[in-house]
Image (cartoon, rainbow, N blue to C red; front, top):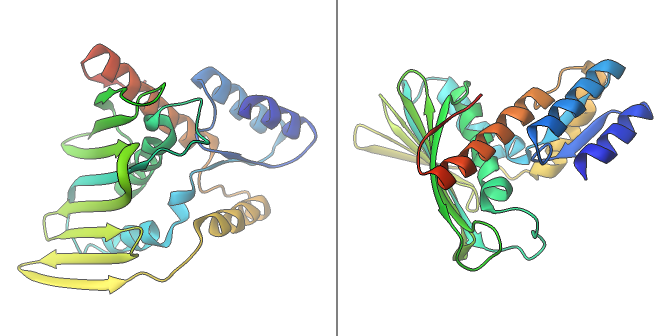
Length: 238
């Protein structure tokens, strides 16, 4: 329903914050992006983890060079199935979060993806392992499923000077360098509230932190991961 209501809102002159993923297909997403540009309105995509203090703190520490050059980022996002989700599988529902987060942390985009997924208890894929290739030689790895009784949300980055591990649930960040381990507590902050504040700021400044182009990229990677799992081979991201 994202396409229909977004186009209606844009025609009415509104700025739009649309939930992730931006749409069901690339064609729909591109139509929405063109429509927003035509009427000069903000179209922001609700990748809420981008505003999570865990992710923003992680990003700041990486950009400050504390880990050196980042060569690998891994994310685990597993837990029980949310019965409210009935129309898509775990890649589009959960995996797309970490597609966005890992690309955001790298500050670049994946060019190829390989994935393994399967269906066990639900109509769509309910587990997936996703590998993303970031040129020239960096990797992004996602483990996600709806089969784990306990919710787990972790993020690990490996750099030439150290390793960092964050836990979204405990709001902790641990950095290991030369056998020295330093842990800190990340201040609380509701990602959805921060996202809404960012949307209001985007409307005022016309500087959108997660625009339609980024939303389309994340959708492309998610759909490429599904295609890779079906074909059993890596897929280039157009």
